[in-house]
Image (cartoon, rainbow, N blue to C red):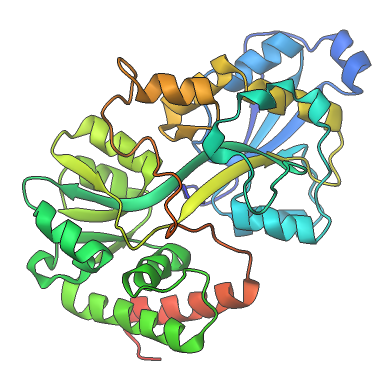
Length: 359
């Protein structure tokens, strides 16, 4: 997912908001006044939970994870949640494993608010199991004073191997994202299963490590680029929007070789204990007010069309911010497929890249 956060341990937050005791009406209507949500850390608006609790007379148990794989492990262990917010490829896996409930879209009328760009996603084209929460891309944040725009346009992802910028780059510390960069730089699909192409990408990353002295980071990239510590970084679009908002010297570039277009969605697990209230929560998140709070706080592109237009338009919080609104409809951009064999192979090679070992 695109946004991986610095949460080393699962943190459970019981957010009671300002609404006082749960309403007996909620128990009568939903069968329970407790909703368990499992989401990425630092990935929700400041007042979203408390306002939901107040409006519907319920309590939300809000737990966070730092990766899709961490979430998946807990599900496999039998933990029960009413709402999950996984990424595209993980949703594909959960659908294959019959681990999700089909949604009753009649209970989610606000689905009509969905932005055009997140309708008909390939892993769930009819929104049978999932409703988009945030979406975005991956690109290069760069210091406009120190990085030549002509180099970016001429080299694309390969600028991250241009020794003119040696010692001045951050790479995202993730095998999926690092290999995506290498695959795209070489003209391959980021979902390739061709071993020759995988090896070529591995060599690309090894050469980068040896010649560019990259710093491998996750969340540290935000403060690092805000402070101008490096000249370039591979960054998720929402984090890039935040960086650009805080440092006017920074720009955002989407290489023409293509990139990862990702989406995180709300789903209801098969073992959810309160699916009725889960539907209410999904519908609430798609409302204007909740979507606005979410996107203003987190910085990622809203799945609500009105909010997306407002924040990116004239007078909006992200007006002129080239990272907020992801590129749409570009044929070289891709969505990650669920392929556990490829994931394991890339993990193995990424460990070697970081250790400087030849395969």
